[in-house]
Image (cartoon, rainbow over the protein chains, first blue to last red):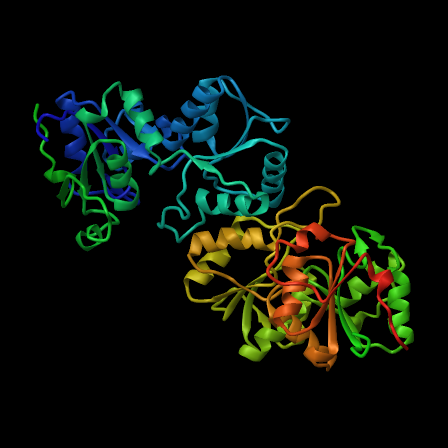
Length: 256
Length: 256
């Protein structure tokens, strides 16, 4: 893999765990920047804007420029813009999603929207969900940023986008279209944003069931790091293999 | 079926539709009472107490005594009391459910409950759902009053117990146990409450997929009335048949 030069890098379990940087992560990022390697940090978490995430990463010692961060919210906005330019959406989400939709030219409305776009939220209530259900029943298409069913565990488990999507799916009988990992759409969107090709790019992730499968489906080489969710024993249970397995990003060699 | 004397009677689509009594329903109820027939009105809706429902039915011209009404909330409370007498439950529900649990001797608490009991609610929020998810992850068993995924349509569709259960199931990975129809538990609980046997009892309902299947599974004779959801054409799509098909309860003969 020495000749591959570009990286898509998962965030949680690869660079950070909760609010702590993982072994070798700050140095890995610094080396990528120093050597002028093209890379993006990928996250399914649609809560935050690029700038918010830049700040959050900086506070734990990771110097990732805002434009090197790519979220499922950005992938969703770019997907919708490609499908239906300057359309209308009813959005359940935080600023990471609303900002991304705004930037591609979307209008937010609860009157006759083209899409109901569901992202992760810090809060929701019966009224908001009922409105989404009714708009979908009235013909709006149902899009969700990411299928994750639970959120970060720092303060205890919380239901995430995939769980709320299950409620709306049950009430409407309509399946959501999930844009985030493991949908290869997220990877292709990131590659296009970065201006690189899949065959020159390596996906680095800690989960066999999202990062690695998404990389495999998109024709990227893959590195599984064992600093997060998947263990070496887990690897055997999947019908696909990562190209390489490493303990952490500290072991990834970057040639300048 | 002339000799069968007892009736379990579904409410919506059989006796009422929204806030309107269906053809012949008031006279049917009056005749049951006049002839001393044992009967129960069954509803999967756990929102209301027996007394609330008595009042609601009276306002549309149906004179059903409170003790002739049996809800999924009552069935759930009786089931829990039989499984784990005087236990503790964290409840998401309205007075129909909380009252029923109180009456069987249950305590409501969010500290180490035996069960998380989910019923229909007029409102819910992120905090309440997150609490339920965490209690289930901590070992509380997950019970839901009824599997219906949407509520009454009068004022537009709203997500119901089954939809909220789908969210919690997705977040916890634990399936709820649904007590209401079509679970035969609901029918057996009603028969026991009424003090009658299945072979002497007729189930009257408007839905093949809940009322009729529940009756069939519980060994009751069944009457499908075409005044609600299921049509004559629908009947062909199911692997079981009602004992009798009538246009409405007006056609049910009651012998005094």
